[in-house]
Image 1 (tube, one colour):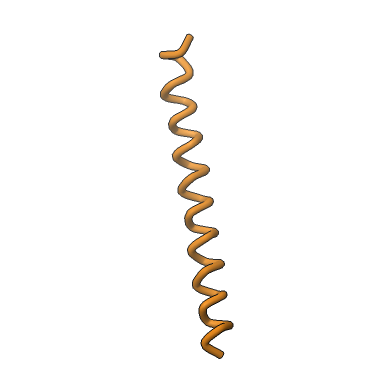
Image 2 (cartoon, rainbow, N blue to C red):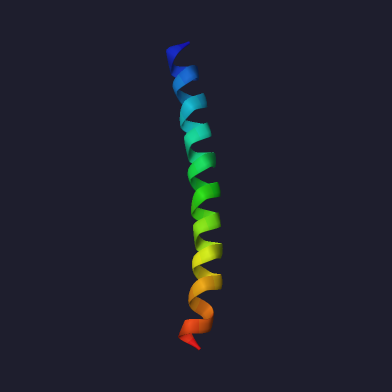
Length: 37
């Protein structure tokens, strides 16, 4: 049971991290694109 709970938390953390990373990448891309060109 502990293992399954751990997996759930890990999956949730990974999903959150991917969402945040995706948002950061999008914002970063939008912000730096005009500066780069």
